[in-house]
Length: 389
Image (cartoon, rainbow, N blue to C red; front, side, top):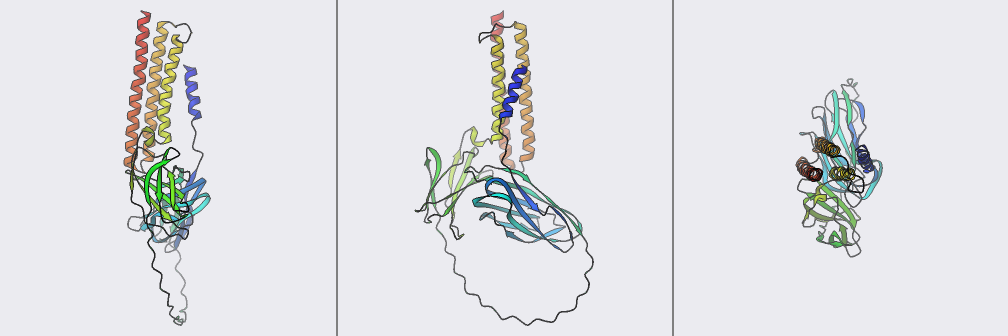
């Protein structure tokens, strides 16, 4: 039994850990300011691998700060949701795509100008945030969302300043009329195959333009895939295999070299099915590990029972081994359920309803798998009991 447990631990060690890391930070992370002073806070992203999308909600205490304006940074050049803020709710929201992908340190996402209102200790934090990889799958590579803490104090009263001489009125400047923006036609998209795999095939009037495909689930989770149209404006992009089970609304938008973007295409409804569709890799690991443990105990039982050429062990020893296997399987599944519960507490902030549904489905799978494994052990035990009587 010890050998089996050692083998199980070895298999766990083989499970790949997330080496790709991406963090969003608020800069500066700390500082001291006086009441009435403007505080410039930068939202930055650092990624070990190329990323293609970032989104977030930044919260601030409304009694200590108010937002004066928000400016876009340089990392994201296609905005799914324009940066916006609300001084009533104390939130700044943003969601955008990096068409060429970004990899590096402290890339500028956006800049917030805050005005200090009164003395106190103010914490600016990410209420939610996500960074997706530019890997054609929209893999979530978020590993950290870093907060900032500022000390606000009442400053010394300013010394009186002499009244300046009035400046002469400037000459009025007459601006040339701005050209009316041309509305770019939306692309058309349909389902198809690319090298035998599911794909989105599109056609547009925009040669060599960038393409942004959006996959939006009913839970609100989103995956973005980017590509480039050919000389005729056509494009073919694979459907990400990472998509979870359920329906998705798929749309396409073209981005021209000068920054103009087309209307969004009419949406397609994509139905993703199968257990791999809704399980993230970490959930799939739980289920796979549970199955592996069950198989290991069954194989171990067969070996000790003598089905592979070894002499059969005494009946009492077999009974003891079967009971021990049942206990270990039960404890293993209990730990897996606890891990899922802990994971649910930390991840439910992103999309509560979607995560809750996933957790319930996986817990049911674990319950069913445990029953099947225990039944197999019981059947084997019953058969061996009959042979030894």
